[in-house]
Amino acid sequence: MSHLPAKPALLLFLGIVSLFLAVPFFEKAHGQGNLAIVGVFSSTYGSANITDPSLTIGSRFSVQVNVTNALPFNAYEFALYFDQNYISLYSYDISTGTVFDNSYKSPSNYNNTGALRLAVVNLATTTNNHGLFLGGSGTLANLVFSVLKVGVSPLALAAGMSAASYSAQPPGGLCPQGCPTGSPNWTRLIDGYDQIRYGVETVDGYFKNVAGMEGPTALFTVSPTSPQQGDIVTFNATKSFDPDNQQAQNKGILKYLWDFGDSSGTANTTLNVDITTHVFSNGANIFLGNFSIRVTVIDQDSGFQGMMVTLLTIVPPPIHCVAVQGIQTNVNQVKPGTNVPFTVEVQDTGTFRETFNLTIAYGPPNATLAVIPNQSIKPNQILHYNDTLPTSHLPVGIYSIVATVQLASAKNCREGLNTSQLGIAPTDTTTLLLQVVGGVAAVAAIGVAVGFLRRRRNLKIEPL
Image (tube, helix red, strand yellow):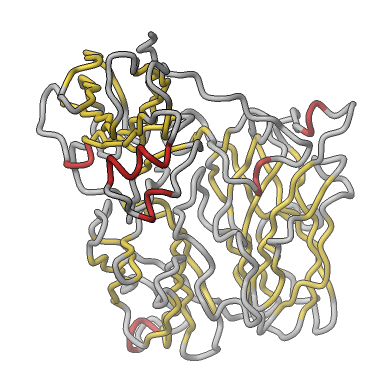
């Protein structure tokens, strides 16, 4: 019998990057080497700052969303915010002069109400290296804006992150018809062939076609800076100001529009005060992971907007927990003498790297099948252990396979124990079930099938 962790099955790449599939990805984010930069730029003006009073109402201007210093990738996602009162997105082009030669636009794209949410993959061909762009730098998308009024507008990208929280999404109200599932509320690059997501730094742009007036500057702080799951988080925008009207109340700011980027139901709010709080949760579902936080300030004298976006990571509270998530067998009822292979799935659902012993037992009568010592696991990691239960010495009956994890340096959580049941039946399975369980009708329906007892979790394990 083997007690080595089972190797995961290889994932097949089917041409369309796994951007749209629920498969594991490696994450490369802040603190993991030099990050690529995704930024707004205008080749016409040679700058991210488009200041031009000649851009009158009805005229158009072009900007690019560019990438610099990127590792190979074949998909990207971003959200670009602007003030729809002063400019509107006339068109966008993901193919002409861009880094991709076979672009495919995801159904999760959304273009309306002051934001372009774009998710694009480069489909693989026989000649484009699985769709991967290897050049490091280039243009992701070409955008054309129409001028609606004389004034200013931010051109602000959503926060860069490798892995968004499962609970991250455009808040309700930001998409009048409802954002499609998976609409990005973040900015990142993806290598779908090698299953890697990359966090990025972002560079914003700015539009201005009015002389002698300035738009407001949005600034805010977050407390605590590294909030734990369930914390009340305070957002303080008191440092925001209008350079044209700093002596006025709230330094010239009239309103504060908050976008907390989650599915709480309270993530889109407009206030007249500069400090607010938010809990990243929805009922009993308490969120974890990365969120893009945006504040939009509106000044008192002109109604101009300023924006600031930042990444906020909600971390789990410190906990030691290595859970036995499931015991998988290919049958749940066998004849006497059959060897029953099974797999135990173990996951570190806590916040610490752990060393542990795994004990596998069965009964009745209680007997130890295997003790697997000195195993190492890191947070969110999943390990599989293969073993076999011989049944030649066991009489007809119902037996339990029990897997228990003991931590080396801490008390484990209650999820460190899990049980699966197995029936040993004679040729006449009806007789067995009547004898063993007293003719319970529901149990009499048991047949040969795949059995997998997997623990149900209320909280999702978030990629951090």
